[in-house]
Image 1 (cartoon, rainbow, N blue to C red):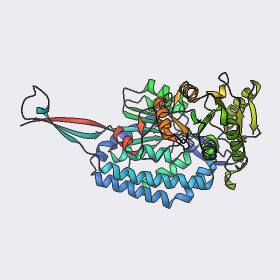
Image 2: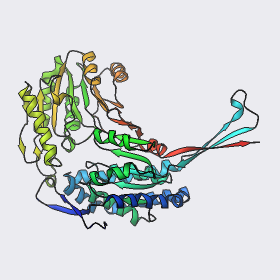
Image 3: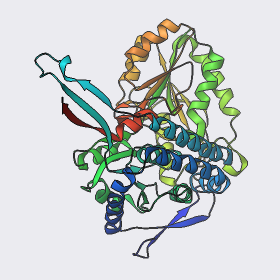
Image 4: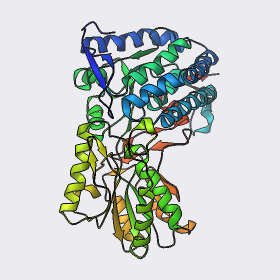
Length: 462
């Protein structure tokens, strides 16, 4: 609740409906949430590890019990199909359980001093893993539960407390996930959820001296701003992407087309790991484009309540951006294969051929259902195109030649490379990272846990 008596209406992106209201908390209230987390942290860190793990197991069970309720709000708030929303909750419950298991295996180490020349005999370093303190978790609209849970669970298992700033559009879903944690028995102050506009409370949260770690998923510009404001603390950033699908001459084109359509248009392209451009060898460009067109034609367009594949984008601003990128590319000579229809915030899946370096759609992240095709002479040109991007999240390579794929993968400036598969996050215990403007730090259950602790060294002398 907020003492300001101000609230934010959450509007459904695909029909005229106010889904609900969340408090528009003030800067003072955001600061109070951080202090609440700070007061609770030492008590929480003193809770035995097996009991912290037990809370996470109970949270996972409660998430599944509340799955229908939470899925309904995910659908209404962010426009996902009910099936996709339920899958997000199931994935989140699995992630919480695996985090509990992995966290119980986190241990310290002993280092003998006599392993180093000139060290005095009998010295031993006891290295423990201790929590950082208060973790600020900032999650995005496209996975309001999963990308909240993936930050909160590693923090809690390691003895940290959390201030969660969920997305405004998606706040209700995240609040319900937090309710599940409290129903599971979470002590007061261990998780604090702050809702409101980032412009009102963002600076207070990211620059607060009691915050000891920030985990953020969102836009690159915001991520850079957070880095500038953070007080010399660990910052984990999951930012934008412009993931290429490189299709070589010997690729299985049926497989490539199927994976590319799925990777580009799942959740209407509103994923940082969506395939956002195709770099295809010229000799196979025409057959691949025809397969892509046929695949796109089969996508269902409409309401998430009808289990459509392509649903309205999150808001009018997002739809305007995608429409402008398409229009500019067509004005500059790109060829429309399919799509370029709009109905409110609903953008029909669009495939463009003949995209060149001067077009914005070749470089900017659209976060919507538009896929540019760029024809290349050979793998060298494909690598040049891929690495010229400011982003470096993921890439896909489609070829039957594994050795060639591995050689190309080594040269791509990205965090992960998928071979003959679409770009995507997961499984959630795999390391997940981006380089360049795509992020900072490494996530994935084990890596996230390791980020939430620091070494504490005690030197023993026999």
